[in-house]
Amino acid sequence: MNFSLTDDQRAIQETALAFARDRLAPKAGEWDETCHFPVDVIRETAALGMATIYVPEEKGGSGLTRMDGALIMEALSYGCPSIAAYISIHNMVAWMLARYGSSGQVADWMPKLNSMEWLASYCLTEPGSGSDAAAMATRAERSGDHYILNGTKQFISGAGATDFYFVFARSGGEGAHGISAFVLHKGMPGLSFGANERKMGWNAQPTRQVIMDNVRVPVANRIGEENHGFKFAMSGLDGGRINIGACSLGAAWQALDKARDYLFERRAFGREIGQFQALQFKIADMATNLEAARLMIYRAADALDHADPQATMYSAMAKRYATDLGFEIVNEALQIHGGYGYLKDYGLEKLVRDLRVHQILEGTNEIMRVVISRKVLGGNRA
Image (cartoon, rainbow, N blue to C red; front, side, top):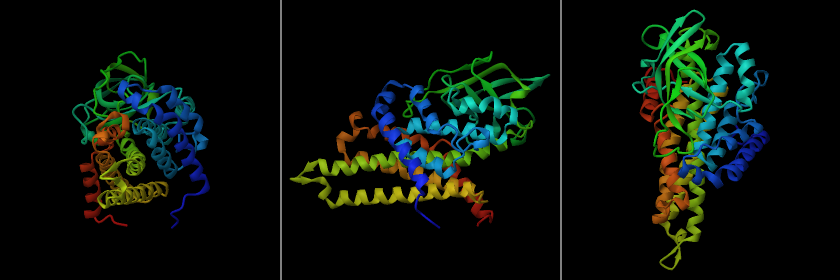
């Protein structure tokens, strides 16, 4: 058991952190305020190998590990968690194509995902099915060499601005066993998008409905066998949960740095506020919680890399813990800044708003407890 990063991992982390500081952090506040999705800046990450992080090299990807991916997402989120989270979603779609797509699909589509000429969206959630994803109502009816898709997907990151939509729809009976996966391309007749949602946070990426009205999708665009799609959707969530937890780490890391610096800058009652033990203890707890959450994320990523049978449980544990503690850390950093923390100029209120949704998406933290308790109470312990 070695808790040190390898030289390659340190280089990956430093590259992502440099990009976050140079290309994301300086504009993050402006993008949030103007609801701007910086596609040009996002595409720059492709040249750094961050578009297909854990797609094998032989399938056109970077061939890195889940641990490498967690390091990248944590570092990018130091600059902007909203942008980092979108890049995580793009990577999840690329991995699912590599894992479940045919050789022809991978050959045709992966190069444009790898270069980010095409940006991707993951379309699972619906207006009436969130945590109960298997209750989806979107239908895919076979008609010769096409499927006809009808339905609406909800809360889709990047929708309207992206090009490649990984969509789950009901092609069979009720429940999880009647769902298939399809690729839709922007511009297909009948494919449209709702208004950009007015959100608390994550304003640097659009969130819209994806609306399908008799969209004709070639059978060649189905991923894998018919009615096997739900297991594809669930398999992608372990990695997604690790990544969203890593995004919380990066934002908490930035908040901790801001709070630490502020303790030396702000004076009250004739001395630096960092000399007050109450604030020293706050910083101590924030740093401890950040390190504990980081260890859990790294542990879960390592479990996924090694196909540990408990990887799903570790991923749920890490996601729940890191997103809860990440939010707590950024909120404490805002509190340390007092009234100034409430101002947009200091960047902390944005982090509080951005990280709140991490406790909801990729499975709510209540659902994470369901996943964990089933593993523990079912006797599936390592």
